[in-house]
Length: 118
Image 1 (cartoon, rainbow, N blue to C red):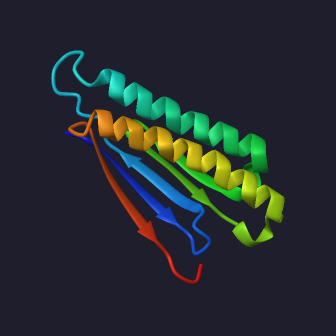
Image 2: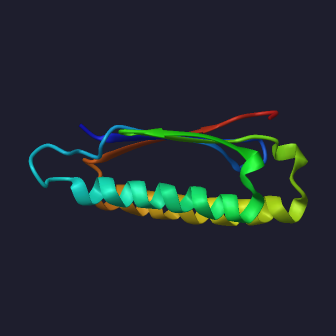
């Protein structure tokens, strides 16, 4: 079983929502744990960095065993400099996730979606 990472961008190409489901390919004792831990650590770091950057009034999130979601809300209320910072932080996260996927393609599946008119 692989983790499934789903990313949605808004019309300004900002990360609007990320959903991570499942544990990254854990098959036998010890196999895949490092990938699952890396994915979890990257996602928690993203959340904390974004809260620090723009504040928690702009997010909804859920997390429980094998599930993490982060949704950007009130994008239109963000000042332009904060939007820029948000994009920089979230793009850094996506570089990390895509690197992890490239190195461990059997453990993480990835899907991107772009919205129009958000």
